[in-house]
Amino acid sequence: MEVYRALGLLIEAPTAEHGAVASALDLPPPPEPSIHGNEVAFQRYPYASVYLGEEGKLGGEARARVAGFWQALGLEAPEEPDHLSALLSLATGLTKAKGAESDPARAALLEEARSALLWEHLHSWCVPYLESFRTSPSAYYRAWGDLVRRVIRQELSEGPFPLHLPQALNAAAELTLLDPREGDTGAGFVPGLLAPVRSGLVVLRSDLADLADALGLAMRAGERAYALSAFLAQDPARTLEWLGGFASRWAVRLEEGDRIGRDPVVAWWARRARSTASLLAALAEDAEVRPRVGEA
Image (spheres, rainbow, N blue to C red):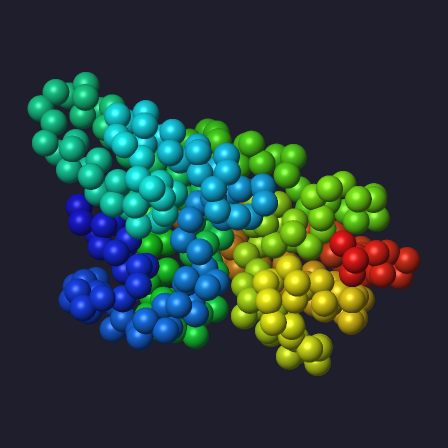
């Protein structure tokens, strides 16, 4: 019952109580706060809106959708309703409420609400979010990410998958990565590449550092969009080729992580990543578009 709440606690900045909680879950000892800052606070933002929002940023319609779920349950939405810790804590609260409910009909409604929480507001974005932890240099965060993934998927595997995609993924059907050869659409190629729901990818700053090392390019200080734009200006063809390979590998990693098989959410994210990989490969081969991509 308390596993979800405990897992949510462990993604927050480490405190004195984290050690005992991690030990109870058979996780490695929590790292220093600086590791949390580098691996979570500055790279892997634990908010649904970052992964489901059309701009890949906090807030917006994606956050409002989650806040609406809290309100539909008759609860006051917290200040950060789409934070992973808050959502995992809500899962625990719904389980407790169901266990204390004597009315079978109300208990069934609470179970439905909990299933909706897992499918619509956790699994929908935790698929790519948790996948990003596989490359973390921290054994603690790799183990934490794997445990959260297993706990959610184990519960989902106990019954048939819903016949529908989560609402947020259905709403994102048209939010694809736009081809810069088709002109300025207002969305921007680089921002779209860094918006997970558009590209299907989670591109961390550490991934861009790997790109710089692999291609021998200068890594600019600043936001990811600025650094990526600089790479595209320095060497567009090889940068696009590297990114295409990254997207292909990302799709494979997602599918390999589908331990329960035929997960439509995993399939959605993998398809989007493969579409991005195809576009990047085409752009890398198109000599005419390279200067324009660097300016996007």
